[in-house]
Length: 117
Image 1 (tube, rainbow, N blue to C red):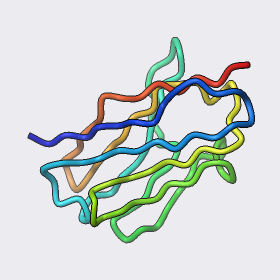
Image 2: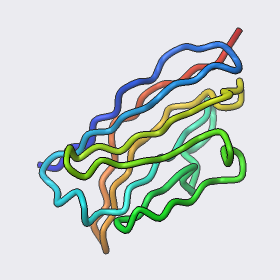
Image 3: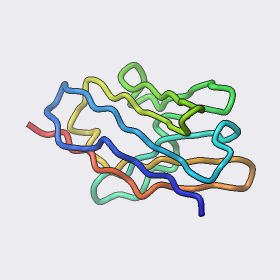
Image 4: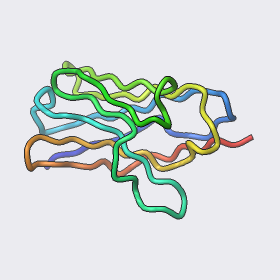
């Protein structure tokens, strides 16, 4: 069974940083496009990823996080990361890891990030 497991969430103050991690199992990780989505309180999960990294390592970012967040991947260890800097209260959300290839798509269970003073 495919698993994506996120970690690294927590409570931070505005301006601080966090790094989220996601480890994938039972997939040919290097072939998958990976992404991070988020769901803010009281809203549905956003339909557009905040950050994505393709199998060829090309990256894309939502305007809301561009310049503050960095996505990366480590194919040797089946890991994808999201480095989040200059966090704002609006970044408070559950962050989900996502893996996709063709019609196959998998989600992690999410990790909570809270940005509050």
